[in-house]
Image 1 (cartoon, rainbow, N blue to C red):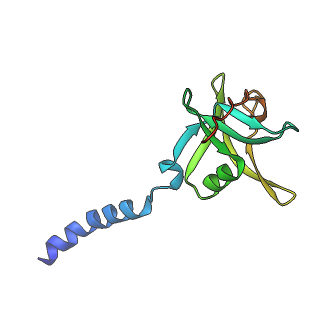
Image 2 (image 1 turned 90 degrees about the vertical axis):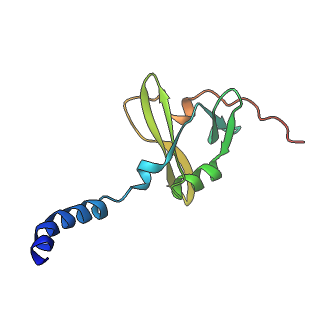
Image 3 (image 1 turned 180 degrees about the vertical axis):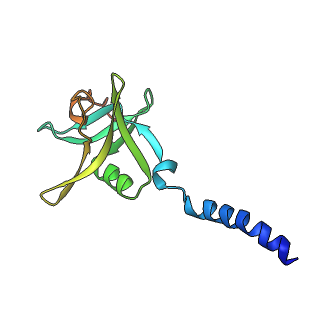
Length: 122
């Protein structure tokens, strides 16, 4: 009986090590949402974005910040095949959404077309 245990132990140990050493990272299981357009205020500052045309889903900046920080979703832009991750950046104690730097400015949130107006909620 001990012989079978000794022979099987290396295989079991390797299997256990493989199963326990490769945890699923939140980044692999996040829903990735393609941001199509942005929402800007009167000063031209990005205060949110929208996605999923033609029905459109609007996301305000505080909601996007919370979702990103909690690891609930991953947002990204993509223009001309160049993808940029949306991330949270703190400036003067306030959290804002930005796109990662790359070789393109076209995929920056501030350069996306404006979201269509939200329908009035009655």
